[in-house]
Image 1: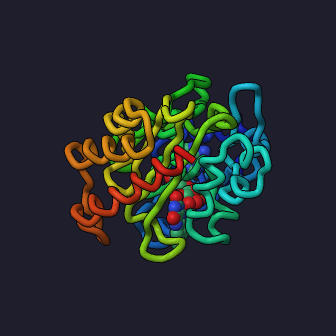
Image 2 (image 1 turned 120 degrees about the vertical axis):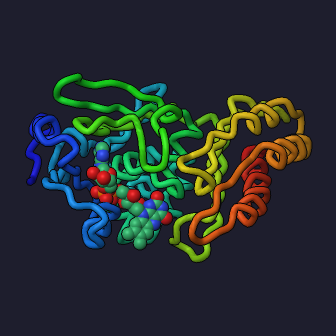
Length: 277
Ligand SMILES: Cc1cc2nc3c(=O)[nH]c(=O)nc-3n(C[C@H](O)[C@H](O)[C@H](O)COP(=O)(O)OP(=O)(O)OC[C@H]3O[C@@H](n4cnc5c(N)ncnc54)[C@H](O)[C@@H]3O)c2cc1C
């Protein structure tokens, strides 16, 4: 069914709950329907919902991205390029142009594929998801508490992501690195990061690995090690120490946990270099 407005969409979700699925870009949902991995009683097409189709908007502190912001918009929007450079750097790593033209940030964040770039960026940057339902109205959920397990999150069956807010990154350093078998494939291991640099010190470090666990992994002990260092070389040495000791990587169908852990080392080193640029 084609939702005509946000109110209409929330009404349908309230009525059908678990039996309904939102159809955004369809780049994950359509393959899963085609393969009979999912068989919802009702599809709610949200592509005409104006309220979640606004272009990126900024205030002095935050940039708000509507749920239907396409992955391609993150590459072409001058505002995203200037004020959310982490997303601008990450988006070209998502699949191929055809998928990026249709796929949406709301769909990617809601699905939370463990190997996805955007959920990891949201966790690294401590973004806030705006969820809405008919019965409970709007609520704000930090990305860092949104993900709760493999494809499980804080969004209730009658709720949807309407937007996501990122603190502006104009004055921050960002780092992004991904290793995949072929360009456009899902990551074998990836890392998104941001930090504030003053001289040789980094503060407010946020690092989130992806494709190593059930959902994006905020690497807090590694962030703390980097914040304690007073040069790039010391930050790398201290971060790698913590990484070797603490970091777990779960195997997936394509990559063993040992291979992921090995690749993660160089990914981490590269991202710390980025943060010191
Ligand atoms: C060949 C291929 C390669 C790909 N490679 C990558 C990759 O490298 N990296 C990557 O990140 N992704 C990749 N993708 C997935 C792509 O990025 C999808 O666009 C994205 O995961 C989902 O976005 P969507 O808008 O297409 O959502 P849909 O497929 O429409 O929906 C996905 C799920 O999210 C729910 N949903 C959608 N919007 C909302 C909302 N606003 N609120 C709550 N729930 C919502 C839907 O009900 C559904 O359950 C790939 C896909 C394909 C087919």
